Structures are given as structure tokens and as C-alpha cells.
Image 1 (tube, rainbow, N blue to C red):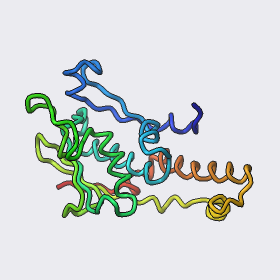
Image 2 (cartoon, rainbow, N blue to C red):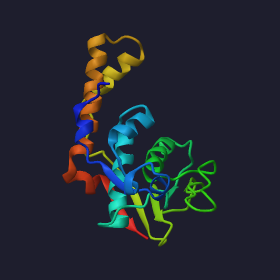
Image 3 (cartoon, rainbow, N blue to C red):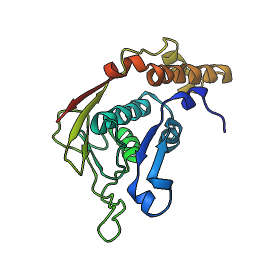
Length: 202
């Protein structure tokens, strides 16, 4: 399986998963999630998937500090409807990382380790995404904007040609390279993360 090298350079997210520990899936329940796994989940790598990953990465740091985030004990709230724009894509990535399920999620074992009803849409929150700890009730509000990292000007015309079936194989390849180049800048420009992902508590 071949993919852009920068996928492996993106910092991973480590969590403690009590359910995995209980069922013996991961030693001590420690689980590491990488950007590549989120790309597999979404089926593609784009600024939206990258933003969702960064919101989870930065949001969990703000929510847990130096302690490991507790996977399966975090509620994900979205301000918009699931079908609005890229809301569903963002929620899918973040909920995968934090182990939050909807109404059809895992219902637990004897009332313990349940992961259902941990995500919701159309919530009255002051941000695009909100993550809340179920143990303490502490929340962080997250917004994402990567407009300070613009796309290459050649990308739009190449995309148009490709979607209309008029691009050569070389042009299709060039488009993919330019597309991923922007995603790479988003994910590896750590000095810009605080500008791209704004975080407020409460």
C-alpha cells in the first residue's frame, strides 16, 4: 500500500481505552491512532479530514492536559446538522478517535463501557465542535480554519479538467500531488495549529 510520506510524519494521538483494556485488545488499554487510519476511515485525505484530526489532537490536549484521554468517555457535539456540508465527515473522524458512538453504538457490558449516545448534531453550542468529558463535565469548544494555507492556483483548473474527463494522466497525477501538498502543510505546520484550531473552554 503506497501513500504520501507525510502521513507518517503527523503526530499520532495516544489514548487510554478502558474497554480495550478490559477485553484484552490492547495492553493497559493504550491505543495509538494515526492520521493514516483516519484517511482509511474517510476514504480520502483532504483539508477537512486534516482539520478534524487537528481538532481532536488539540482538543484532547486542552481537555486532559498531561494525562491520557479516556477513549469512550468523551461526548462529541456538533453545531450543524449531520448532512450540512462536511459536518458528517468531521464528526466521523473525531468520533472514531475518541470512541464516541451514536444511538447505534456499543451499549456496554452490564451498564459499563457504553459508547452509544455520545455524539449529537444540531446542538446549541458556541463552536463548530464541542468535546466534553463524561467524568468531569469539562468541555472544550473547537473551530477550524485553514484559509491561511491557500491552495496552489493550478489546483482548481486541474480539478475542473479531471472532473470533466478532459485531464491527461499526468494532469490527474499533478492534481493529486498539489492537493496533498496543501494537506501536508496543514498537518505539519505546527506553528500555525493554534491559528487554525481555536479552542475555548466551557
